[in-house]
Amino acid sequence: METDHARLRRIHLLALLLAALSLLIVLISAYIRLNGAGLGCSPWPECYGQILAGGPHPHAGGVRVLHRVVASLALFLGFGLLWQCLRPQPLPGPKGSATALLVLMLLLTVVGVFSADPHRVWAGVINMLGGAVLVLLSWRTVLAARIDRPPAGVQSGAALVHAGLGFLVFALVLGALIGARYAAPACPTLPGCAEAAWPAVDGLAALNPIATVNAPAMLGDAGGAALHLLHRYCALATVLLLGLGAIHGLARAGARAVAASVLLLLLLQFALGVLTVLGGFALWLAVAHSAGAAMLLAAGVHLMLRLRATV
Image (cartoon, rainbow, N blue to C red; front, top):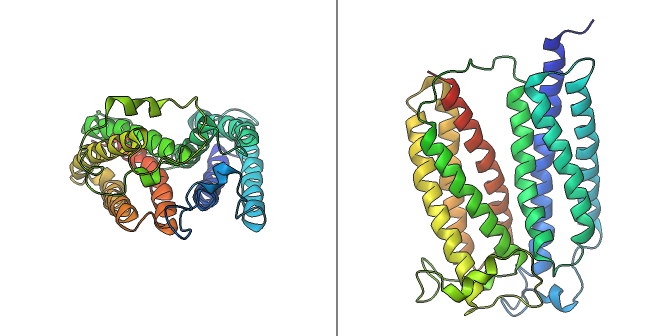
């Protein structure tokens, strides 16, 4: 009869493969979405968001096929992973995250039917956030299936990381809204949007995800500027809080490697965010920024779990 140790090892390997596939899905999705919106087109920004006016999508072929193949393979592995967690008897550790991962995959499959219409804000937001959560849940399953998991201990130093993760989630939501509303050109300057340092009240209506867009939010759009400014403030709070929590984690042997990874990803994300704006929203920078956000979320949750588990 197979031991739980052997099952956990198989689950661990399957979850690692799913984490890699999930990150690949995020990269391909970001490339399709951002290139379809017009990032990298010339002349910028006049060509941005032409897909909203019924223009042709530049990737109706190979890249979309690759995305579907990778997503289908990930879904197949998701079923296999959950099966391994439940049969012949449930393993309480990885079962919860594997279940949530498969449910999310099925949800994103349904949402994908509505994503063909670029005017739907909610579909774009769910797809973008869903990709980041796919990476998170895959990595959470990897951690839950580890044989050498540390014992539970005193919750020490996790409060800053927890708060930083909260602001990171807000930043992810706002970034998704910027993408779904085609609002990249609304704020091409740093640190503020032209002369505005705080979002205008009339621009807060852009926070509504149940809306449709018919044209990109260009320079001077109050809603687009509000999203950019709020995103930047949340990103700054994330850097400060999550960074302080990671520095705290460097002093703890059980969390040192994860804390260093979080600090590295924070610096990388901050640099990518700044370079994306200063570089005129270059396509490859924007794609890297999207993938980096997903990795930072997974690493931040990993750090929080390590700080709670190490003494």
